[in-house]
Length: 234
Length: 248
Image 1 (cartoon, chains in turn yellow, cyan):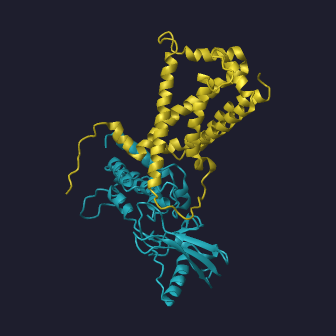
Image 2 (cartoon, chains in turn brown, yellow):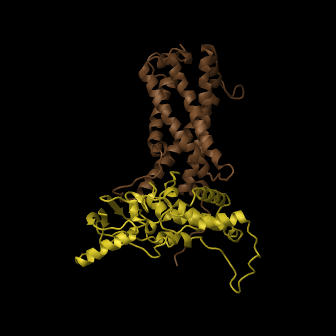
Image 3 (spheres, chains in turn purple, brown):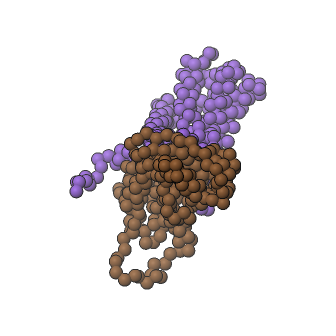
């Protein structure tokens, strides 16, 4: 009989992560953090409808978050670090799971006809990777400013308006946010399954939750470029 | 009716396979899918050719032996129907039907449409049992079971282990099968002593067999001939996470 090591694994998290279900759990938990972030981001964006002063004041508040306990900007960087860690974990786990899934069926079907697979589910991987590229562009565009034609660091309101008045940029944002909406729709429902939140009484609400919040987040994000394009905000 | 068949033929697990075309006449709409294959095999034997190997046993949807991919869907187009229960009246005269074996790294093809599913048996061996004292049968009402729980346990226990969930899953995951086998014991009082070892052990075995991971596509639920719900997957995930938190 082969001897099996029974000692406790040195690193509990690594042992947990080695399992596909562990990776799924990491995806669900980081997904919750990222969903919380996009929801707050969307709500903050709506400040643009209250005018330049309110919007720029909100942006400055974000930089000053955590003061006076933390020095200026440190709170924001801590927040960014958490988000970047979550994004990195989310993408790494998704990639590892995708590769594992490919290995699970080395010989493909000549014909596989999905019964009820929806568009959001089919495009989950691609919408995810496209979102990663979009995030890099978005940061270079509005945070760093190198991808912006007329960037003024202290005037985010101006940066948003001048960017979206050029329709191809607005179009990129609109398409990216529609992708985000679909990604959220499948992700928000899936995380309940992955984390084992299941009860006959509350199960129908999981779908309602996913539909509601993916629509609210997408509509909120889309409202900004659409409002600028239509001249509602200038 | 006349049917054009495209059937996967493969000599053995290491030989390369290919789709072979056959035309079959006078197929009755009242025959089952397997009877249609029987008809084809009779003709092949008559012509001195090697018949198509496919697995079957009870032919009434309870043994789980007979699954094949029919036009890209596990057990064919009818919901909650095993291949043996599929009537040929589901198809029209002149239809082309493509038949392939289940495809999974954990289900190697033995020959033609027959695959080796002992990987599923090994998952069950890793925890799909309860500890009972041997000896004379205990008094039947000694362990009270809530009616709702016993009904749900029966829903999960209806799993016939056919492998359609794995076959249809774009990821080749065995989550629905494993969760049904974990769940029908974990929901009952008799299954409580090994509850968390069972979830941890069977999930570990499932992953070691090379099955894919669950992306919540719910294709498994759609093709399951017994209508097993993906709710069982959530329950298994919960027990697995709790097992890990307990250090199992």
